[in-house]
Structure formats: C-alpha cells, structure tokens
Length: 211
Image (cartoon, rainbow, N blue to C red; front, side):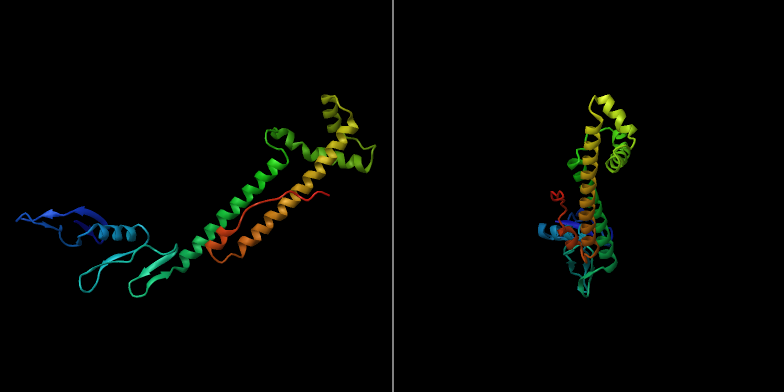
C-alpha cells in the first residue's frame, strides 16, 4: 500500500502513527490499497487525466486521454479541447510540410546526382544552361564558360555544349515534375481536418515520364 497526494500528484510510502499503524501523512493524501489502483492513477496523471475524491470520499480516476487534444470534465467525461486540437493539427501540418520539402530536395539531389558535387560547380550550372540555350538558338553564340571547361577537360566544345544543353533541359524537367508533386502533396495537407488525415498522407516522388 502507498499514499498519493491529490494536489501535488505524487506517491509516497505510508507513515506510522503513534501506535505503530500505517497511515497517510495527513490532509491531501489518500491511501492506495492495490497495485491496480497505483497503475490506474499513473495512467491518468501521465496521460492528461485526473484523480479526485467524489462526494462520498471515494478515490476516482479518469484514466488516460483516449486521444490527443482532449480534456476531462468530471460531469461529462472526456471532451475535445478545440484549441488544443487546433494546435495539434497545425503542428502536424507543419511537420508534414517539412517532411515533404526535405523528401523533395533529397529526391532531386539523388536523381540529378548532386551528391558530392562542389557547391561552386553547382552554382555555375545556371550560367552553363544559359550559354547552352544561347548556342542552341544560334550556333555562333559565345559560350566562354563552356569553352573554358571544354579546354580544361580536353573535350570538343560542341560536344560539351550539347551535353550541357541536354543536362540542363533534363534538370528543368525533373525540378518541374518534383515541384508539381510537392505542391500537390502540400494541397493534400492543407485540406486535412484532423491529425490522422495528415499522418495518412504518403510522401513519395516519382521521376518524370520519358519523352
């Protein structure tokens, strides 16, 4: 047997009175006579529930909250806490959107082979793409960056221009496809009315269909 303090919500060992009998420590304490009673109290106080004495002085427990975002009313039982559930839904949506964005970027990095490529080189890709597109529109267009890369690699300039053009267009198609898929998932999250619906959204991306 143990004793439980109703206000401060913790257990303690029983104490002995002047006659050597086990008793509670005084006001605010109640005797708990079984392990089942201790377990019931623990389940309540650690899961949003309540422990109290009824009008007859009997110890009562609410049990754990049946779902997140609920509060216990001693007259009505467990009730939805509108504000708490709204906060839980907002947090679930924020977490899902972050997961979607992270997964989209990871998919792009893997599909485009970006892992291991230095940042300075990736930063040059936009200029390489502009030069390649200009060359595709006019074979006499100047492509100084691509010319420098071709010279350093020891490859024909036109071959490098064509590769840069193909790579740029493939990357544009990839990013457009994944951006669309990400935004579609974002739209799904926006219309979710509860946390379960948010959690049910499967985050996955697929490569663009071959032309």
